[in-house]
Length: 123
Image (cartoon, rainbow, N blue to C red; front, side, top):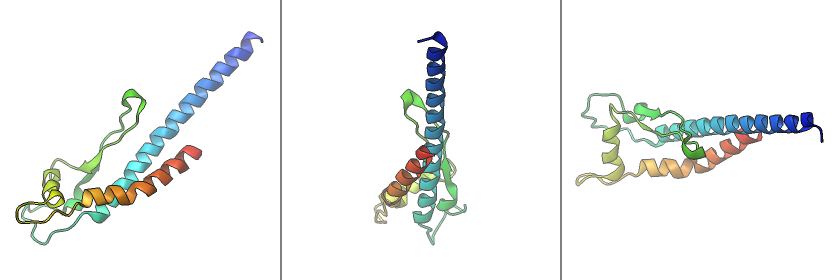
C-alpha cells in the first residue's frame, strides 16, 4: 500500500471524527432548546407573585455547551435573578404542595429530545 493511501485514510478518519463531533454538538444544543421550551410550557404562573418581577417561565436559561471527558452537556434551568424561587413551587413548602414541574418537563421532553438527537446525528 502506498504512503499516499495511508495518509488519505488517516485524513478521511480525521474528517469523519470532526463531522461526528460537530453533529454531536448540534444535537446537544437542539436537545437543550427542546427541553427549555418544554420547561417554559409547564412552569406555573402564580397569582400571588410577590417578587415584583416577570413570571418564572420568562427566566429560563440555557448555559454554555460543555465537552468534559468526551460527554457533551448543556445545562438548562432558570437564571440567577429568579431561579432560586423555582425551588419553592417545585418542591413545595409548609403552606404549598409540591408541583414537580421540572420533573414533569424532563419526563415529557425525553422522547422529543431523543428524536431531535436522532435527526441531528443522521444528517
